[in-house]
Length: 445
View (spheres, rainbow, N blue to C red):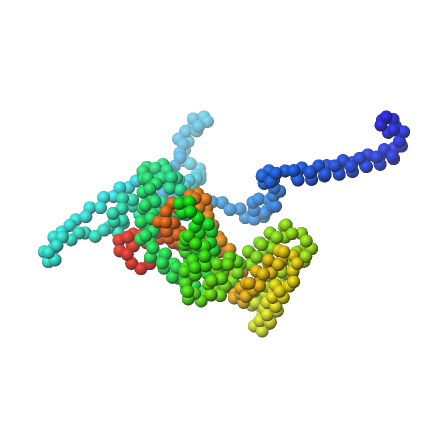
């Protein structure tokens, strides 16, 4: 019957009917796609391929980068021919040559050193005297400084568990050592390097600007907290059972008179020094609320506060172009705008909560504008706490309080050396040999 109806229609009517059907099909396809997206579970959505934002690699026109050539050649091997490989005809002098450079690793092996100590009778002192330790010797230790520093870097720099370090030593150097022996050796090492950690903390307490942050930690299955106190050149870590403000106060000291940059965690309010709150944390909270709260009130106030924070960053950038009076006047107006916004009467629950936070920390939000050396975020502390999070995910924390202290001490020295772009291997070796044979003042910091 449908076919007979189509036969009675004119050409123009059939064309219009086909166009109408195409529109209906397209609408049904879009509806079907929307229903499929709603019914996809969250774990499936996460695995769906995402559209690439930009093409990978360098843009067209950029100079290519290749591996740099080695600065020296240890061995030269020449490949020659006396006869043609095709026809076996005798060949004369080469007409040209070209070089192919190849870098390789020499297989490691264990070096066993015997330190023989000679004793002598002193007729003047009337007692037996013993020759001193050699400069490369670790007293009462059967693992040498190279092996210990390698174990330290594999554990705390490359985040390898002791079982993997044991396999690396056995596979690549035929050195057989137990996991417990490595843990105890690094524990003794950290005890001798404690003087370096103390020097780091003392320097941070006198620094004009420091960052602080904390993350979860576990000791033998019990919840603890790992704190960090850092600046651009030094990093100090401390693991404590408590997350209270007393821990933060004990780390930074009672007499700290610089600027402390933190997030909005209330424990930092106990510290009486000048503070700058992380603007990025505030923006993250605003964006998180924005995704779930689509009300018009939230969107309007979101734009107002976002504009105030954007103007604060812009004023900081233009400070060198403005005179002192102009800058001071604009900063005062900016603070008034922020205070007026914070005191607003909000009916939206999210803004009621955020405005309370703004009022609580009003004097600590715009410190960065008037001080060029103070950043507006706490990203530096978060980046330096991340290696500990990676280590925690590999080893699930520590088994004992001694292991936690070892972790804090060695990580403090390691990341302080990294911030100062020092040679990690040589610095640790020098410091450990020096402190192990003759404890003295800090050598690295």
